[in-house]
Image 1 (cartoon, one colour):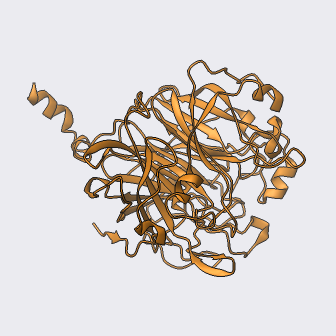
Image 2 (cartoon, one colour):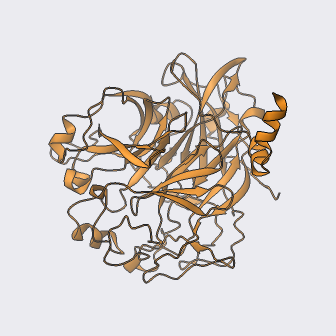
Image 3 (cartoon, one colour):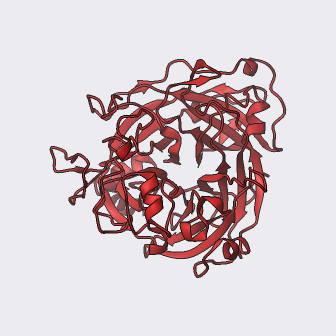
Length: 474
């Protein structure tokens, strides 16, 4: 297997000194790493905006633990920061994909007195496709030599006359990924639909569709954000679809969260987003809950933060990533990157409720877990070097920190495929960064790790040998 290794890792100068106390008792920053370059898709040439089709970027849109030191990461709809065609919001014929990385957590020596340097390894790149034909609208058709119909980041790749949740649409904007209980499939949520699709982990072929209620769909799709917002009074707001996705440790339930309120719930001017739970045995939405956003504006000029991720602590407790878009990559100062915990046990169902006031009155209780801005600034970062778009969260394997076993929580940023950005007029590196938080066992007494089959078990299952070997063991 061809392996691409990470070279230099950027470390803030302050990190060579003794570290400040953690911003939250029982939680500390124990490791950092970064990666950039090209992926292993085998694609060559350039996209419509001149960006290489195999650029390795945007990884922090979502991250999922796949067992051991292995993680899956998804870029979103591809590089669209360079202007080339405003009629499609500068989106390109980027083929959505997930990257498989080894973060090397089990081989890293962690200490409470310093921050370890991770050396991530890119193992593979998996392009996402459909065996059934897709509607590309006015976008270029992307097909493979083996009959694949590839999904695309182009905003105009949809069937006219249908809602945005039509699974025939080729456009896909990945924002959440989790590994199924069998270890052989992945669930991915997106913003264009919003969709939740199941893909074969080894081939990238779509193998299932979970249909969300029509209240989440925009009935009139359009190729630009402005046109689509103007054409719809209900459903997800453009580019504010299902941003976060969790799977319970037993692998039986998906929990998705919208980035912003639905249009009928007040849109981006409102404060309460919807959380949905999905029974994977039936593929049906079972509950909807409300989550109250922080107001980071003023009473005269309200502005609410957005949700980027949700990850399961157990089958009823979750961590939610609530953030602004400020910091490195935005040429501004980071203000809010907060992780909150919620408990859905006993929370009020809002499936039959509509409107900002109705949802706000039934919002689930949330508790601040970690202020990432405070934690990173306590460890050498500044409000201008903290990544603007911290979007990915995943628990990983337990790690040893000074001889004490701790839970690891991986936090990743989406760099929008921009390896270099301006900071006060100075070109500054803007890589995909990994932050590893060590969490002592007393912080989450009810923590349950997701049970994912080991690679050897998956290989035996592929050969049909698992049952045979189990029978011989009896």
